[in-house]
Image 1 (tube, rainbow, N blue to C red):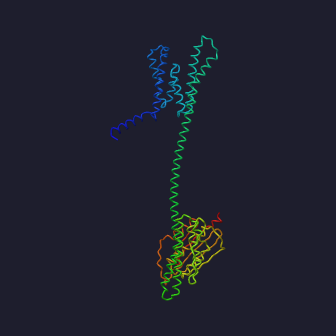
Image 2 (image 1 turned 90 degrees about the vertical axis):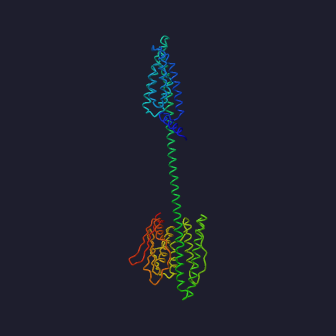
Image 3 (image 1 turned 90 degrees about the horizontal axis):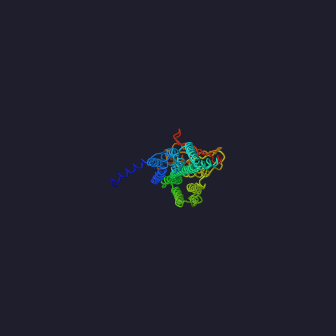
Length: 448
């Protein structure tokens, strides 16, 4: 766009800003009505000049100016009605009176002002009409009721229809504006809801990624840690006790296959999007190698995989599987004391899964950071909750650390699991130099 075009647009915008019409069509309509009204009043000004003994050009010019007032009906409707009332005795400006009353009633002027000006116009029209009719029929000897009845019909016919129609149009306009504002408000609310839905979707995706990572960590890390411990033991006794080395090698192989099976099942569920399939699937069982009770290991692995893939379906490890979990750690040579207090009972699936994962991760941490330490696992069934505690002593100096990697997310994952169910999680070193992990989970079934 050139500079000249920009200047012209700026001049046009300034000119439009000086006017009170929002649209060009409204300006054309008002100018046209004002021209018709000016012509009407100019013609009626001839009769007014004869009655007032004024020169005819004066009456014509006066009528033209009076009728031209209609051009400002949108900006000053009260002024237009007052002018029409003032010129009623001159019997001019009927179009201006009708259009002025309609515009006044349809505008945002208070209703008491509309009623007052409409009453003034009605009274002025009634008086002028009554006097004119009385003069016309004075010599005809008409009835006494004829003049007021005729004046009443004329005044009501010129005042009531434009006022009522203007009130209707004003109410309709306000209703349309209210509906438009409501539609805009609903559109904004829908936009906000869409934004919030997108935020919730992002949050849900993030939570799902976190849950999957936690399940992967809990399912795989424990078994891989046991494999590393058995591999270290295998290396230590390979030359001294070949039979024990063979048993350890078979156990490592079985655990590796179980870990791969669990991982394959979990990834298969993630790809297919069918968590119920993995919830019902169980990893294949192999016969025990050299007297090692792998049935318990396989059952715990199957339960762990089902919990990772089918948490929503209610399948997964339970409190009854903790004893098998402790047995796995004992196979590595760890001294584990396991005690249960209170009468065992069933809990909600998510409570039992979380309790199992807490004990599992605590034992995994002992294998990683406190090899050779004695461990005490406590499980307490209370009235409205279940509590678990895993405490290890000082690591043994004669046992070499297996050198297991640690991501530092184990305790964080346990805390997230417990607090998500409304429980309490506490972990930290003991006075004796060991480490303690404690968790209390509410019995959600009893709370419900």
